[in-house]
Length: 270
Image (cartoon, rainbow, N blue to C red):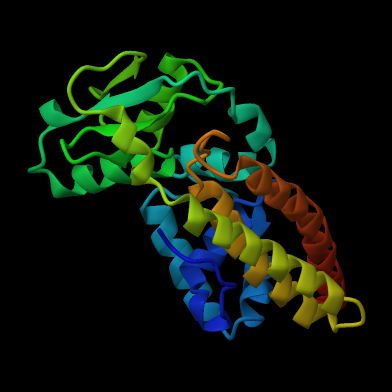
C-alpha cells in the first residue's frame, strides 16, 4: 500500500514522462518535438528523451507509425487500455453477493523470477491479494465475466495456464479473515488526500503561467491516476466505494482542466 502525494518534478524521468504522454486517452501518436517540449518542463534534456524513446521501442513498449511519431507498442497495449479506461470504472463494479474470486498459482512455479514478478504484478493490479495459504483472492464484485477477467490477467502478464475460480462456499481457510488483506482506512486517507490536492490545485491554477499550470496538472494528475488504477475496487461492504467514485468524478473534471492547460502550453511554446 502506498500513500498519496503529488509527484515532485524530480520524480519524473524521461522514460516515465514519455510513457505517460503516449498513453494519454486522447493523445494519439506523439511527435518527438512535443515530447521534448514537455520534458523541458521537468528539466529533462532532449538527448535523454531520445534515448528513452529508443529504448522503449527496443522493449516493444513504443512503436513508430511514421518518422518522428510514436505510439504504444505491442507490449504496452493491454496496460495502456487499462490506464486509459479509468473514466469508465463505474461500469467495472457490480453488486457483491459475498462470492470470491480465487486465482490458483501453485502449479505455476516460482523459479522463473521474471514471470513470477509479472504474475504478481498482474494480480495486484486487478485487486487480488495473497492469503497466508498462498492463494490469491479478491471479492467477486467485478462486472466482467470470469473468462474475461482471466483474459485480462493474462494480458497484463499473468501465466496463460492461470486458473481462476469463483467460489460461493469455501471449507478450510476462513474467508472471514480475507477482508483484512486490504486496508480501507489507508484507502480512505488516500482518497481524501487526492481530492484535497485537486481542489487546492484548481484554486491556484487561474492566472498561473502556462508552463507552471501544465507542469502542476501533470504532477498531481498522474499521482491521482496511479491511485485510481491501483485501487482494488472493493465493494461497498468492504471499503468506502462512495468516496472512491467521488474521487474519480473529481479527477474527470481535473483531467479536463489539465488537458486545457497543456493545450495552452503547447500553443504558447509554438
